[in-house]
Image 1 (spheres, helix red, strand yellow):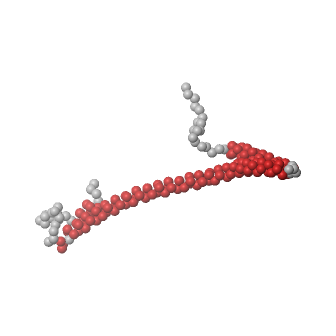
Image 2 (image 1 turned 120 degrees about the vertical axis):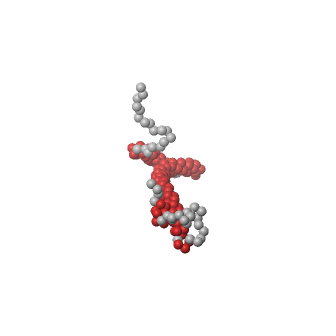
Length: 176
């Protein structure tokens, strides 16, 4: 028998870290940064303390000091800059998600309007066809059109003609 296990997150998925995890990570980063700055401050005090001596030795010490300074400032900038860029990336992702939702909604509205427009075009074509049939019937049944050309399917004049109102009602209302 299989036992039910709690669902484990898939490795490829990224989940939002909890507030406690973020606070713990920020605390470690702050500790590393504070340690680097305290160590650098100690190096500065040491450099000032042993400032007397030969110029060649002092130049070597300043050279080492410059290298350490560059490393410390780079590390501090990386630690703080990473958090700044992380928040900027999260806000950009949030804005992109909002824009995607708005685009999906606009796309859905456009599809709905296109469907409605197609239905309106079909209805307009049907109405136009009925109008042309009514006009043709009116022209054929008009008193002045007796001597003109007639439709091939028209009844001979000897047969009694259909009432125009009945014909129009047949065109407008579909047979049941």
